Amino acid sequence: MPACVGERRILIVEDERVVADTLRQILAASGYDVRAAYSAEEALTLISSWSPEIGLLDVMLPKMNGIDLAVAFGKLLPACRVLLFSGQPSVEALLQKARNEGHTFEILAKPIHPSVILGRIANLLRSGDAEPCPRT
Image (cartoon, rainbow, N blue to C red; front, side, top):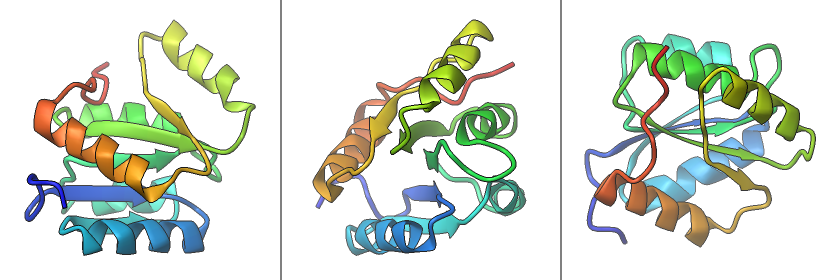
């Protein structure tokens, strides 16, 4: 178990409930304070009353995509770190659009082994090596 858990807050945003709930269970079992939202809109409502340190966001969400959500997080939660994930090869166009607008994000390819996610989250919390949510 990482040394940086306990009150460390993580928000999972994933429209596939089984995936979101499984990730929530894995992270909660590792000691994190975890919430799951099944849409970007639900996530935006949640962060009005609860501030995560890390947003684990699926790129391909209905209505608002995860990259646009990450940009919104940057405006609302500038200290939040974002880690994107996707199983769709078509996200490159969305990432390029974000880069053209001055936003850079790390993205992990699905399927992701839980140990990879746990390790990446522990590293983000321990070293702060990821860029915070972008500010615009």
